[in-house]
Amino acid sequence: MKNICVTTQIKVNLALHVTGQRENGYHELDSLVAFCHSGDQISLKIFDKDALTIDGLYGAGLDTGQGNLICQALDKLRLFYLEKYQGQLPFISMNLTKNLPLASGIGGGSGDAAAVIYGLNQLCKLNLNKKEQLSLALQLGADVPICLSALYDSSARVMQGIGEKMTPLHHFPKLHLVLVNPGVALSTPAVFNALMQKNNASLHLNAENYKNKNALLCFLKQSRNDLLGPALTMAPQINDVLRTLDKYGAEFSRMSGSGATCFGIFENKESAQKAALSIKEVFPNWYVSATQTEG
Ligand code: C5P
Image 1: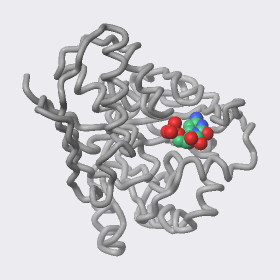
Image 2 (image 1 turned 90 degrees about the vertical axis):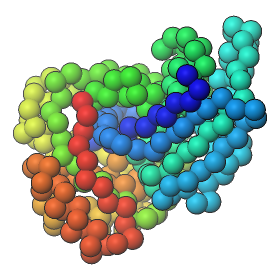
Image 3 (image 1 turned 45 degrees about the vertical axis):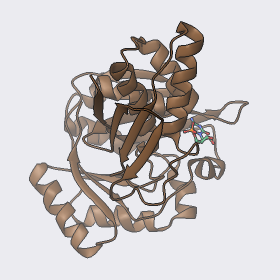
Image 4 (image 1 turned 180 degrees about the horizontal axis):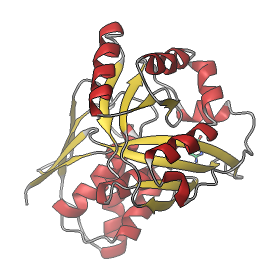
């Protein structure tokens, strides 16, 4: 194999409860996460030097140097392989097609870093086991492990700890979603820092809560995204997005992650696509995408 192309999954936090804060500043989370097709694309090929090129709707202005998490992922993997197995990774040329808006709460950058670990493990036949890959992923960011695990199995999950503990949920109802971002990039650390109340109640999810879509909708209505309050202080437009999703027929709407992307759950594929078209017509500068969960 000379090259490989990995398409990332979109991470949607259906609920996100912040239940505490560790001494190192990271927050304890209890989050219900689903995955949708399809995010960014990363092409990797063995080359005569390391290189990164970026294209795609949201690629302009992205760092092609060490500030980019995917370059850090390549370096970390190379160092790990050398130290643990005395192996040399070849030079790699990477191309990122950035389809997802930046800093938007749906695991864009984390998914890209995860795709580099996943793709290079195959391309270079490194044979790193899942545990080794997940531990590398966690060094790159709290959301990278779950984005990596979604490349192997896109079931919905409960995510706990700072993001490293994951429980797959089987037979999770399929959801038709519309994702909307009002074109505002939000800094995850800034949103977490603005959160006043760090100790909030956990999710308390059980199998009855997702035995079908109606049960799940009932559960979601009683759950929260604790980062909504702080995100709204930085991007009040999030309220407009949520109102718009509701106006165009969402059965339920909420912000994902630290924002500002919000999702609406729709009755079926047709109603999601229709709403997405209408929203895009009224707000041509917003990111609007009709999709469905994978799990
Ligand atoms: O780990 P990552 O770099 O993706 O996280 C970005 C920032 O978000 C962290 O520096 C931290 O401020 C905040 N964060 C947090 N608790 C988490 C995840 C992220 O406080 N569980």
